[in-house]
Every structure is written in structure tokens, then in C-alpha cells.
Image (cartoon, rainbow, N blue to C red; front, side, top):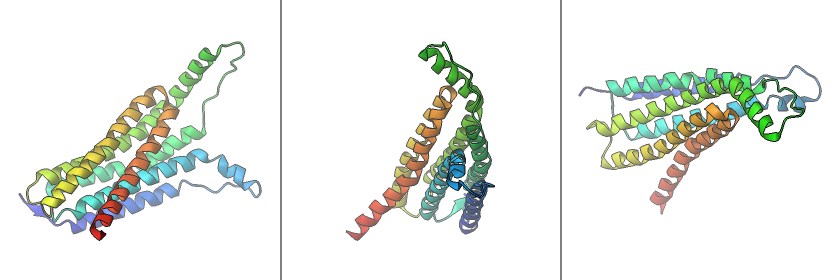
Length: 230
């Protein structure tokens, strides 16, 4: 097995994450008005919501990747390629974020429901929303899923390749991290399935995914720090 240095890959990955987060914030535009600023900003709720979800997700992937590489002493050509593939999907997030936020901020026209019963109104509204929002919401979710799955692949590769990790303790810690990562992947899959039928609800699922991915490694690091200090 030919091993490669991990310093250059870490630096490259950090640079890509920084650029992606910078591109996300560029979609937040200033309203071209001189009064009633707050209502104008409130009208851009979908853009801010998509930004928060994507920022939390990209930040969580960066935290996870940093946690993984901290347990590694070297890389392989396979881990190089997996990392590049993961960064490919991460670099698509600004585009898929903009796609989803655009369609959320331009909802479809709802027809007049005069004379219709409540169930028929709900089914009609959902059908219209699904036809307009299902594709962009699903594309966004597939991007998050692909980035998460390739991140999981990086961890599997590190665990299964002898001599890649620092020690046995690092292997155990990475196994625990991978199990936590799998839970988030399952949430994304469930959210994608939901997105085919209730795309607006799926956006709420992406919020849960981002919060879970962002908070979980942070809590784990805090617990480990408390154990070491106690």
C-alpha cells in the first residue's frame, strides 16, 4: 500500500470549504429600497432559510472531515479520490441551495377553491406544490446525500486500511463517528422520500439533518474534553 502525505489534501479541502461558504453568502442580496427594510428582508425568508441550512451542513461536513483527518497519520490514493469526490458534491451546494431557494420564493399560483371541500383543497394544493417544488427540493437533498455518503466512504476507507490511523483508540473513535454519521444519512433518505409527496415538509427535514450533523460532533468533542479534564 502506497501512502501519501495528508497535509496538502487537508489544506486543499479547507480551501474548498471556505470558498463554498463564501459563495453561499453571496446569494444574500440587499433589497433595492430606502424604507420598510425589515418587511423587504422578510420577503427573502427562503434565501435566508436555505443559507442557514446549507451553512450548517457544510460546516458540519468540515468539522467531521477535520475530526477524521485528525485521527489519520497518512492518506492513500483511494482516500485522495474519495475526498475529491466528497468536495465535488460539497462544491455543488451553492448551486442546489440557490435552486431550492428560488422555487421556494416563487410559489406556484393557487387557484380559487370556492365550492371545494377541505380534503379536495388540500390534495389540490399539495399536487400543485409537488409539481413545482419536488424537483428542486429533491435535487438539493440528493446533493446532501451524496456528500454525506462519500464522507462515510472516507471513514470506512480509513478504518479498513491498515496503518492509516494513529492507533487502536483512533480506530474505535472513528467507528463511533461513522455510526453517528449513518443516522444523519438515514434522515436524509427519509426526507428525500418525503420530498416526493410533501416537498415543503422535506425542507424541515433538511433543517433537522443540518442541525444533527452540526451539533453531534461538537457535543462529542465537548464530552471527550470533559473526560480528559476530569
